[in-house]
Each structure stands twice: as C-alpha cells, then as structure tokens.
Amino acid sequence: MPAASFLDEFLPMNKLPNYTQISFPPTAFQDTIVTTSELDAYLPFIREMQPFSPNSWWLVDSHSTPDTKNCSQTPGTSAPISLSPGSSPTGSPLQRDTLGQITAYTSAQLSSQFHTHCFSVLVIREIAYIIRWDWEGAVVSTPIRYGEDKALTEFFSCYTQASPKLRGVNTTVNLATT
Image 1 (tube, rainbow, N blue to C red):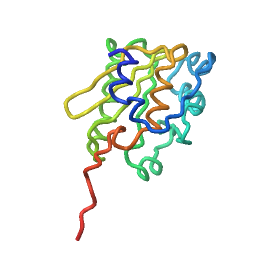
Image 2 (cartoon, rainbow, N blue to C red):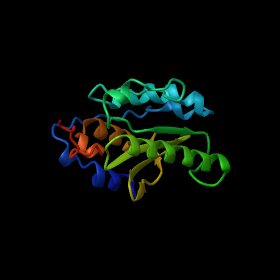
Image 3 (spheres, rainbow, N blue to C red):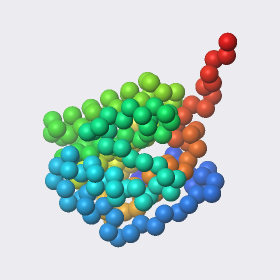
Image 4 (cartoon, helix red, strand yellow):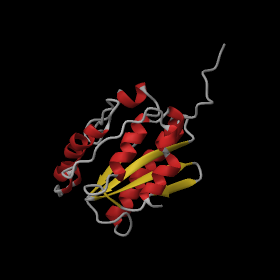
C-alpha cells in the first residue's frame, strides 16, 4: 500500500485533534543511512527520530538493553522497530530471519496486551516499511526512502499524537471488579 494511503487509512489526521505538524529537514537520518551494520544503526536512528516526537515520547534500544520499564508502564505505546542490514524484506535467509523476528515481536505484543492491532517499522538500510498488524494478517506500506520521503516521520509523529484506540489499544477492556 502506498505510504500516503497507509497513513490516511490507519492514522488519519482528521482523527488527531490538535495535530502538530513536524518539519522534515533535508539532512534527516544521514547518520543512520551511512551505517553498515544493524548494531551501529540503533543509536543514530533513535537520535535522528527523536525530533519527530512532539509529545516527548522516547525511543529505547531494547536490542542491547531490554525495556522492562517503559513499555510495561504504558501499554500500547510501543511500535517495534527492526533494523536490518539486508537489501529487501524477502529473499535471503538473513532477510527471512528478520521477518520472523518482527513477526515474533508482534505476536508477543498482541498476545500480552489487549490490542485490536499494532504497528511496527522495518528499516533496511535507507528503506523503511510501516506495517499494521491485526489478528488476520498485516498490511505493509510500499518502500519508503526515509532520508528523502517524510512518510516515516509523519507516521511516527501521527502515532505519538494518536489516541490509544488509533494506536491499537482495545479500549473496551476494563479491569475486573470484585
């Protein structure tokens, strides 16, 4: 699905009251794009993505340090981001392993939190894919050249400003009363 259509369908701006537009500088993500390994890409990506979070959300490199605090305190606020050294989301065993990894992350999130759906982002060198998962499958955006195209930063900005329901939290679930 084209990235603009993806955003219009799943995070429409008309459902984001008081949406704050974020400007996209031409030098966005230059440090991330030049990295040559997955491990080297995490910190530059986190640093370069932070300005696109108007509500002071934070990104955590849970690859090197498990996030046992942030996501457990605020269910429904995580959107797993996977960085891969490959060149496309399918093909080689490494690329299939990456798809298996993000599928496992999503399965764990949908199984352990009350969600109707969730989002994840797959970054492969200079290309990103936004994925919306639900219990029936996944919808994947077309490739986004995130250093040139503002679609990824718009997704992140919209996601951080969206209601819990738009982010996928099942708002019909309540604590049981005694």
